[in-house]
Image (cartoon, rainbow, N blue to C red; front, side, top):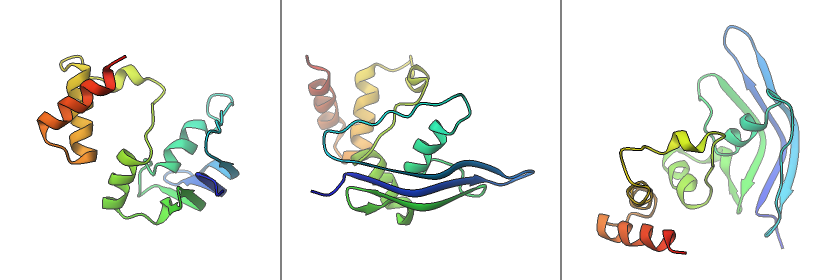
Length: 137
């Protein structure tokens, strides 16, 4: 069986007024049912690593090298349209402050339905039904 996630020699470099080498030669793999925890001090590159895996870093100032394969897809080779579908259908990320990602003006159901419409191409009614299914205990 092949790995679901395969990262080899990942390097992330930020350029601007100065150059920052944020991730250096990181490799890991994850098979089905496996869990990986990234531990480290503040500023050690944990969030940068995960943002690199999802290609959420600024394009103009970031250089990502190495290989990142998720379910057989070369993440670093995906174009913008493929990347958008990949982020919603294959991978997702809960950021360090997940409460900031939710808008108190809308119900959680509305926010889930919006994501379903965006990533699964469902109608508003279908997405609302799917959101309710996800929230059932």
